[in-house]
Length: 237
Picture 1 (cartoon, rainbow, N blue to C red):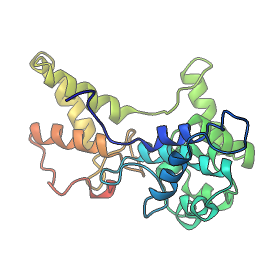
Picture 2: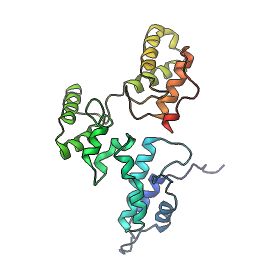
Picture 3: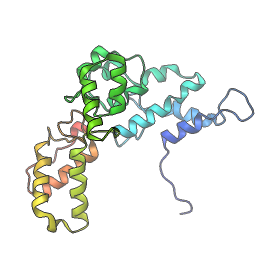
């Protein structure tokens, strides 16, 4: 088996592609990596795993792959990365990283703001939105999170459904869930309360679903006798 092998990582390819030629010329040291980025953009303009969709995977890989802009090549591919009509009209994981985007139409984006005033519950993204708009709901969200975390902020808040799902999953897999039956019952009921149109997000009332939380939540609900459809998760795809 030798060293073993896993699939190519667009994120790592992009970082390697950023290295300038060590001889001092304004060219990439590894042009094959740059060419790989050009050749492997997905149909929707993003980069990442072609067969398994994960919001965070797509965001991280796509933001890294704009390394092409460093070398002034394939500008049309950069423009395809984030279709503006989608970004400004439908809640997506890109709301989590607004600080990394440019030429945003804030009047439209504010209509995608979460109920608590945040953008995807993310302090950094919401802070950037506030610097651009002075929106009072953004400021209220930031004040609430700072108060909750004693003067600091996490990268996302809330993560209540995520915590419930993964804690219960670990207890069951460790074989000790029988010692916490009342707590398990209460927490599973909480998960079911936010089973929104067959999907779940990392936080309650999530307008953007998460495939991991949805899959784990489906398993737990089924194990505890809840009538949830096997057609779950289509909203994540």
